[in-house]
Structure formats: structure tokens, C-alpha cells
Image: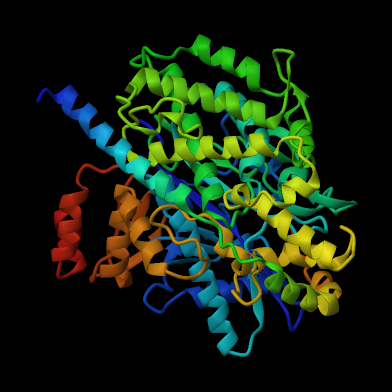
Length: 543
Length: 63
């Protein structure tokens, strides 16, 4: 394995009716999801049978009677309505926000494209409503700065050979420290912006526990929801601590570095992997897991100079950047041992930005993730301990680091207006940063200074076809089959989930197609069956 | 060619492509134009309606 594994993202959007700011956000969200739906697929329901939001990875099942009502997201009548896009994404109302959940893909680059496609879809829904005289605006963010937070989640398939306790420790170290690389930046410190200022992460102040099932209160850095949507040999790491990034490189590093660390943990516990051991992994954890990860994520987020140190289990005091260097170095050295070092015939051996030694990573996505991860670590080294004046002109690093670019823009506007961080103008910039409407979006206005990913346009809400091609290339087998059926026989599909398709034939008989794992050896044949079918019965007969 | 060698050779080809992609990324030059005009525009809009814009953006919590 490598960076390649089934993964996906979910994003709840901020929502506002600018003509009626007090309008019920749940109804607004229903209106948006209804505008996403098309007549061909409006009848398709979500199949909740595979969901179990109160199954805990720590080895127990929370009794339903003990769960807070908003944890029971598998009871659709309470909160959720659904529609499925023609490219296999699920759009629904979750609590008081419209949510977009991408289909499973196998590469971080496809996952970045998938999340950008979500913006395109949601913006088109807002524009449809605009033609009906509505003035609904959507925001790619995770807090209003007034005490409310909502989610930008990631999911990764990972083997159950890794004990959950060790996986959780690794991710406590990673999620509390990765914010310096991939934080989206936020105006205000404290959940309700009790203190004026700017911090690195949107989500950090809303983290109050190390581990837990819950996602809407006392939010944990590591979510323990155990619902694999796959075989019993796999688990799904469901991540709720991340920010909603607009920039492509932070999105790529967020998805890619987390996937590489999942690979590292799998290497440690895979008996076939002789190059890494549980003992070596335990030693790494000892040197990177903060004694108090909740305090760590708060303190790291509030320190733009990147100098705050926290105690880790070994007793050492480390900065977030030092923790990230240790994690990167471990992945790099295990990668070198597993895959070997490329023959170094390149003439850039004097280039200090080049990866130390080029590992023969087995695929391009992995090589690119490792290159970008190292590049941004190098960028952050140059930012450590510098003054505001110096940080303001770190243009090159800001093309890859979202919190830095956002800070630079707002700081310059703040200086032009001769105001302070408590001013409404600063908060307004923060809100406008993630607006989907290109006229309103502050990010869109400065995106010419944002470094794109190769083959992925950095301008939001444009080049949808390019996103779509990249996304389609990265789809898992079962997602490919789901998309093919959605496009060929939408009227026959009654309900969908990540692992099932419920189909009704022309005589009214119901058929339950199960696709337990994302990989399906029969995919090519089944795609052909779908393409050649002249009725849904043809598909069912030859499936 | 033995299979192992083929795999290694293919991995090195991937590495070359990734290096080219990385170089493409490094060659990216941020727009050199000064932001001042853009920032002036934003600042002038904000000077008049920021308070109302911020006050209206009140969300309910989510996941």
C-alpha cells in the first residue's frame, strides 16, 4: 500500500439568506438540497441499513437510549433528506447545514477534485434559487466565530491489523500538530471569539476531548465511530477535527499525509512488512503524542510564530512543527526501507529543497504527497520565530499555506483601515474568504497567488470538467458501478448507500445489490453489462 | 527483464513524472502584481457594510 486507499470527504456548508437573515437554516438547507436534485434522481432514497453511528471503535456499542438524539443520524426522519448527484455524491441536510459527501475515491488528488466538485454543485443550487428570487449564500468554512461550528470531515479505509489504541495515539499526534500545515486560518480566539486576534485553525477551539463518538458537542480530536462501510477486515477512520480548506495544496497534504500515516501504522503491524515493527512504532508514538492533545491543538493554533512547545509522552517539549518533522521522517525512512532509494542521477543534488533521498514510491500520488509535505515543512521552518513584518512578505510560502495567505490579506486590509483585530472588517474578511459566490469570495480575489496542484485548476468554481475527469479516474470500483447505474437506469434505483443499491425491476420486484467492499474484481465486466443493457433486467440477469 | 526489475523501473518512471510535476509546482510564480488595488477595493467595501455583514452571519452548530 501507499497513499492510495479508499477515502472521501464530507463538507457541511455555512448557509445564509441575505434577504432574510433570520430565516430557518434547516428550511434553507432543504431548499438547497431540493435544488440539487434533478427529476431523474429525486425519488432515490438513502438506505440507512449499513449505518451504525453509535458503534465505538474502543470495543463497545453505546445503547441507543443513552445516545443524544443528534447522534442517531441513522434515523432519517429526524434531520436528514437526501439526494444523489449524477457523479455519485450524496447531498443532504445534516442538522442546520446542507452537506456534500463525495463518493469513495482511491487517491488524494481525486479526493481534492471531489471536494471542489461539491462547491460547483452547491453553488449551482444557490444559483438556481437565485433565479427564483432567493438570495441564499453558501460558505466553505466551519465556524461563524460566534460559538457555532460545523464539520469538514475526512474518511480513510485502514486495516484492522492496526490496534485502535495505537492508531488513535498516532492520529492524536498528527491531528493536533498538522494544523500548522493545513489550517485554514480564523479571525477570533475562543469559540465565541472571546479574544481578538487571528489563529491558525478554524476548528481547534471546538476540540474538547481526545476520543469520542460524539461530533456535535464535546468534540473529540479522534472520533471513535466504528462503521467501516466495508468488510470486517477494514475500519474507516472518520476524522472530524479538520478545517474546510479552499486552497488545493493544504487539501492535498491533509488527505495525503494522513493516508501515509495510516500506511505507516499498517506497516508496523503487517507481519509481511519486515522493515518496520510495532516496537519501532511504539517508540515513534512515545516521541510525538502530546501529554495533553486538547491543550496542544489549542495552543498550537494560537501561535502564529510556531514556537509554542508542549510536553510529549517521552518528556520532551516539542513544537507542532517538530512533531510533524518526526512523523514525516518516519514515513520517509520506512518508505526508503520498503521501496528502496532511486538511483540518484539527477543533477539537482545541490538543491536544498529536494527530498533528502528520493524514495521509489510505487505511484505518482504518493511521490507528490511526500514532496509537498516536505516542501511545506521547509516553508514552515522559515516562518518559525519571525516577526509580523517578515511574515507579511512570505509570499512564496503563502501560496501553499492557507492560514498564512489569509492572515497576510486580512492583516494588510487591517493596516489600510487603521483598525484592530476586534473590528468587524476583519471578521467580515474571514466570512467572505470561503464564500462560494465568486463575487463575494475573498479567496477567489486572491487565488492568482495560490499554487495549484499539477493537473488541478486552483480557481474555485470553474473548470468543473477538469475536476470531474480527475475525480472519475480515482473512483473506487463500487463507486464506478454506482455512477454507471445512476446514469443508465436512475428510474430503477429505489435506494442507495455506500455498500448497497436497491433496484426495482419492471414488474415491481425489489432487488438488493450488495457491494460490501470498495474493490470489486468483477467491475470491468459489470460496467460492460451496464453499458450493454437494454433493460434493468439485463443488468440483474448478468450481474 | 525480471519482474522485480520491471517494478523498480516502473517506480522510477513514476518518480520522474512526480519530479516533473513537483518542478511544475516549484516553477509556479505567485502573481507579482501588487495586491494594493484589490485590497483597496475590498477595504472600501468593508468600510461601509462590514458590521451588518458580520452580524447577519449567525449559524447553528453542526457535526
